[in-house]
Image 1: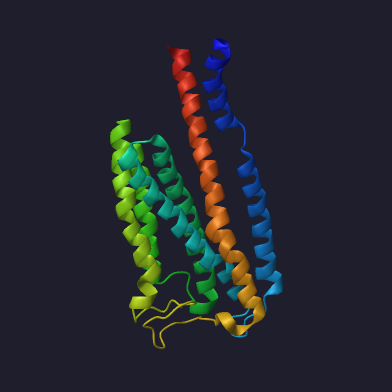
Image 2: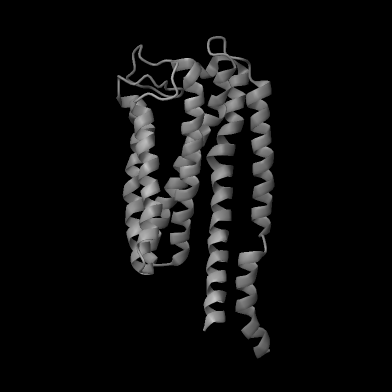
Length: 254
């Protein structure tokens, strides 16, 4: 009985790092199906915009990807707060996963926006307030990753990263609301009120057709929830596995 008891923690740890949980498997399948369905809705089901043409279809990924980045980076805030309160390493792993997934989704948003801007604005990049604020946001979180790599003391690294991750969320909020408070932006506001008059270029009406609404309704929960949560879960498991490998290396060398 004692032998079984001693083997249980090791078995549990190995299962957590190597065996895929049923919940993650189900979530992965749902995410793959959701992404495929979203692409069909965006590329095949939704009607072509009369003014912008097919390039408008990129909005069905462009906008939900930013909301997904928002959700992931909000996870970093939650992870940072909980780590500072409990000093439990699992919350630090959540914060790190949120930053890396958030950066990836924000880059998808930024790059798809550049692809859309080329035929609509006749340029790949312009120093529009929205584009500039998102670029600053991405660089801010890239600095978070560099901060973690630059501090050797593990506890100090986690503590500084938690504080930084919480404060950096200000850049996310600014990026989210800037098109609603800056009258000089040419970036369109698709949903919700803004202070824009006639400066926006390339806006489209969400209620233009059933296809537009349905394409957004399918892609929004997929990219805003399923994709970031699934990727963060995998990233946390990868961090757990990396720690286990490092522990085995130290044990072998000792």
